Structure formats: C-alpha cells, structure tokens
Length: 142
Image 1 (tube, rainbow, N blue to C red):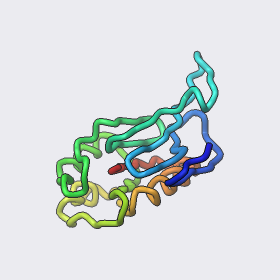
Image 2: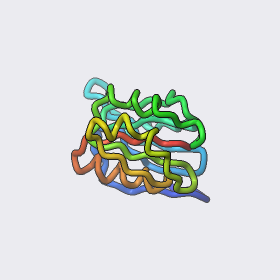
Image 3: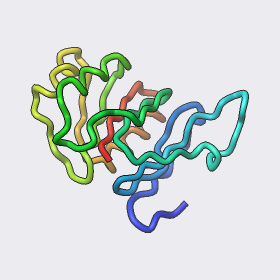
C-alpha cells in the first residue's frame, strides 16, 4: 500500500485487534479484527475513517463528538472513563496542541495517563502500545 501524501504505517498486526494501517490528513485507514467465524484478508478488513474516533485494541467508535481541537471539553474525556483505558493517547490533529488541564482532569483524577501528540504520532504510538499488549485508547482528531 502506498500513499502519495501522509503516512503508511508498517507493523506486525495482531489480527485480533484494531490496528492503524495509514494516516493522511482527514483520513485514517484501519484494519478490523479478524473474526473466527469469518476469516478474511487484511484487504477485506480495511476500514476508512474520516471523522474523529476512539480506538482501542478491541473497540472502535467513529462517533466521538469533538471534530476539532477547540471542540474538546472535560465531558469528552470523562466519557472515555467507561472504556477503562490504562492510558489515553490524544491525537490533536495536524499539529501538537495541549488541552487545558481542567479538560483532562477527569482522566488524571482517576490515575489514567494521558499522552498528547499530533495525530500522526498518536497513530504510531497507539500501534506500538497495542502490539505490546497495553490497554491503550487512542482519541484521534482527524
């Protein structure tokens, strides 16, 4: 797979988990977990996402409400608590921006680590931590 712009991500995919195959501004290419009852190739399991999303090894939602960095609120981060992540990797879009501490407070107050980076770096970090077996949640603004 080649992208003319953006980033292609190579990894040893755990076929049981969601992984990020590539990122270009505004578009994320995922591979969905392989189901035992319906084995398939990576090509058949690709999913394109063009909205902000939440991604964990066994979970994906492309209905995360904030679509831009300025949309982020403490309530968006509080909603992530229900997923019980060990660590949250926040991708802030094309450039690195840090949310105000009060917005991250729901996670920090529960002892959940938060790493903030631009979205391409967040994609690479999610894959690395997911392959390492961590219960990581990527909250990605595209």
